Picture 1 (cartoon, rainbow, N blue to C red):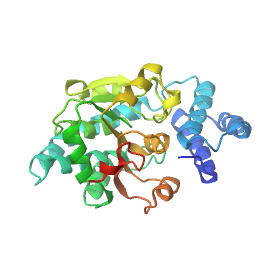
Picture 2: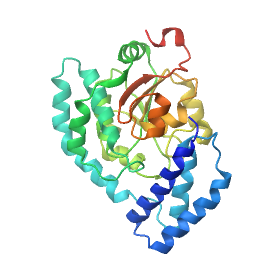
Picture 3: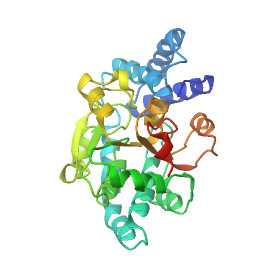
Picture 4: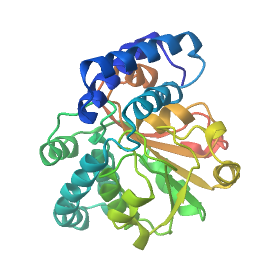
Length: 290
């Protein structure tokens, strides 16, 4: 997915929101905006929004001297999600199709995204999403490919959302490898966040080797690049991972909420839709949608 001109206002909004979280004063915030504005001349529209957005957080980190501005908020989201875990786990267990219910729980967790919003109520918004129907629903294809897969890679997204991913892992027949960011970026999950959610007990946690707020293969470590290209099945969570991988010819199922207009337009869905999408570039496209 390429960056559009519609992404520009979002970049500056992210500077404003994160500056407030960091406690930057007006001069520091203006300096961050000026530096990013100067860098815009180098912005590549061919790159994904997540690839370009990485520069926002590099600038803010340099100005503030703080590597992980959302650390406290991430911890709070994880603790809040863990309190919801028993109720959501029971919901899955009592569902007619526990796997499908666990998928819906996992995508509901995708609302926890400080790159697109700061003001939300986790419990209330989770309930709202669980009442939604998938706008794109390739669940039968997912079931078919899951049954055949032996080597599954799950691309994580945000801290706190990790708890909802854990509920899905507990319904999968295979142990998965859970991919996190190498370094803190926005509220994306790192190794520390995955462990705090209990992921280490049910999945193998690995790093993408990148600090981008997405899985962008050319920015990942050589080891991870080899790993992602050898997986039987890839489950990709969130908008950022969709932005980075939507054009890749890999066996990917995208699981996300289309929170911004640019992503919604790219998917040709209404903004706010929840999605379980088999990639149109799935290598074995003849059987991908069966």
